[in-house]
Image (cartoon, rainbow over all chains, first blue to last red; front, side, top):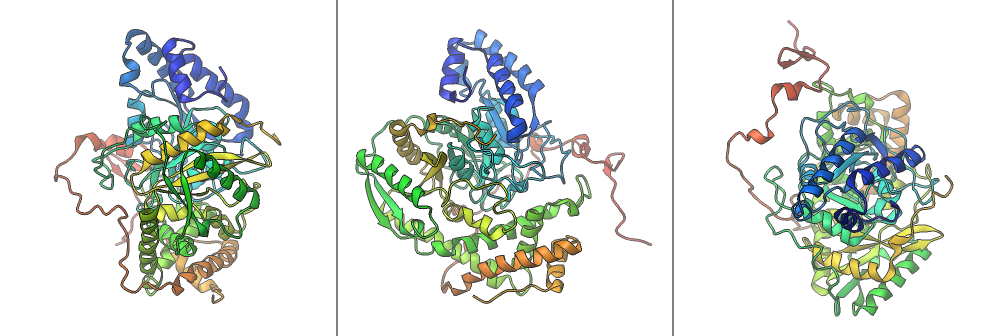
Length: 476
Length: 101
């Protein structure tokens, strides 16, 4: 089997037909990891022994129950779990040193749902500590490298999950997206990455970054695979009171339906100076593909875009400073001087914007600007069905390029953060390559429009098939 | 945009609010970095927000309640709750005294 090519869809069919066993598949994952992970650093913890044991159990199930794939839609599928996800008995560090030995006594809701659906947990993936970052370099461990070019970042904060799926260590990588953290690594690693609507997927047991922004998404090679995983993870959870009481879509069922007459908006504020010219051209070429399917493209305006990053970098650090206040080393974990530089910056920034005398000028004002950003999108969606723009203004940048300039690092997410402010879903899909580096295209829709996003992305993917261009480990 | 230059005193005050202690090098680095971020976020001051309500719950859910009952399925035993601590006594976390006689 070739893990660089393998998708969830192929793997399920081959497991069903007995082309390979689950044990063979999982062993192959660990062979790939042992061969490559020293240079990529995608994993913080491997779950090898347990995974192989589970694989044998799955093989027994396949032998004894013909209906098992209907009951367990992700049976035997190897999954890489971001280290922010609480996993019972598997070390969970959030990419930080402060809880470097934490072994959780429970599973996050999403982890439980994935296990119930039959997945095999391969390991926990590297990330910017606590989810703070766009490159993976804010990990308290060794930074993850981009499998397409090892001198470049894989995108963050779900850096390890992105790289792991790209180099074939797992068939799905889970992530969290508070401002960019699933879509950016998806864009930089030639993957499909979903930031679901806020409240579509339970946050219970996923270590909180900014509670009114955090969304629980995932990365896969293809649109079908991505939709298949959301069918498992989405839904109401009594343990997360912000999950929304709306039916889970039949995300794989709509794939292949036509999009004739679909109105696509191009936010003119996303096609401005600072956007790499070649990326601009790549997105424009991709739109032509969608026009061939009968979509209509028109320019729209999101007038408050220019203020989105400022609002984001007030509201998110404010929530971060509150959420991270519990890590005081009193009951367990290390003490607060062990926080990395980025966590300290965000705690301080949030403490400042919430502090007496500044609350109204910063936090409250930003919460009002958040309303304006949300309204920008709502107004646009009265005219058009979806929005399309680049995932990132540039190609994956070099490791080290932005580490000393946090503001420049923050601005990598300029087309992604507004989506989190509005709570709407965004899907990054491969849009081709510029100078041998992946380009991501972001499809944005109204709240709870994930079915529509997948429908558009699927037709585009079938036509272009960029996902078939696998990494060559350049500069490795 | 007004140039922002946080003073050492301001940085130490913010660090204290966040329950952080900083070394000399951190004070200098963060002074510069946070000043530039604050200068950037200050551009919000030019937005007109008259009559605009703040957003905190973005999908509009309100008053999500549950019955006031203990849920066994997410209750940890004291053993589980204490499993990750390095400092315990019997069934309790052992912490440093905050009051002295």
